[in-house]
Image 1 (cartoon, rainbow, N blue to C red):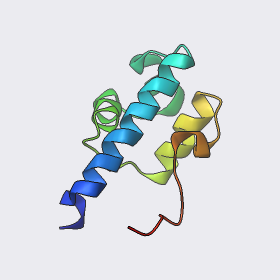
Image 2: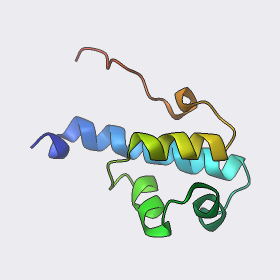
Image 3: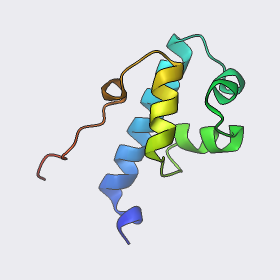
Length: 82
């Protein structure tokens, strides 16, 4: 299954780490970021741990709340060839 691909798991973890770093740099706790974005705390925890597939609307909400462009999250499209 695509979701279980090791490369996807790695990228999901990297994204979660970037989100956590940007959240901390913006002086947000998980709770305050959840309040600012409408994302549940359990979902944010799963996103930051690299366990959840994040929706584009969540990416936009997080980027806005930390005052960053979506590109600051390291999202590159189309993906580079392997």
